[in-house]
Length: 316
Length: 60
Image (cartoon, rainbow over the protein chains, first blue to last red):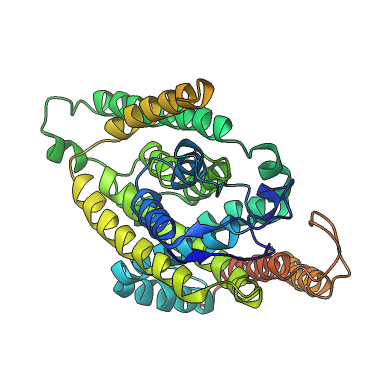
């Protein structure tokens, strides 16, 4: 079996591993593809792909761990695969959003939904990007172990259930509880209609996903629900919001990644697999959230986090 | 308001250049050129200019 080897690369996640061992450990091709599949499948689900990426190598007792230098650049490419999948799914919307952005910026006025969505995405992207760039070193150096990832996975589950409780309270206030789920959903707004303050809050929520175990998509979908979006629209806004941040981080990091002589073919294969998995999961989730809720993912996160803590604690 | 936002945009551009050249080291991981910080500041500058465009008086 071929192995992936690489040297430490400066990265957006570099501060995640402050005590890197100078040794190089190997990630087999099968392990790389498995991680690509896991990352792509879990990135858009509200279950924290980063938490899973931290936990799985430890639980499976791979010699390759999350503190390994090669883990960081590897994740960069996997995320690019996810961003590419999102770009493919929303390609027509992105053309309209980019066109709307320039039109509204020059005119100084928003007249269409695409123009408003473009500005909402700009406002929503700024908080996480700013916090991510200026504070990432401090945040991530605090949280590197699988124990913390498992604990934050439990927290993520509680947050998902909390978001749904708040939504149910809003539904009760709107006296729509007796209606079917489809009818209930129609009472809530489209992404283009939320306020700019709500977009900034949803964007700021993204920064919480720096903690392994806290799901970026989960926290932004939850924020969208609180802002009054229907589930499917909250998921759509979350996916649109994710694309510039993930893509931007990838574009900045990838040249450094390849400059360090990593095995490009193997990394790309895992990234493609990640993109395919992300595409399938995005399609599934957009369909699921027509009438589905966050609760099952919340319960899954609590169960997975507690089980991981037990497995790690007792070395099962 | 529009002028203030425009000035803010220019300040962000200047800061972006300083980070890119490695002159500014605030909130960074160490010495060197900080292109990530520079790109973020360019985005903030664009946002400021857009906000300035929205805030400027419109002719009927």
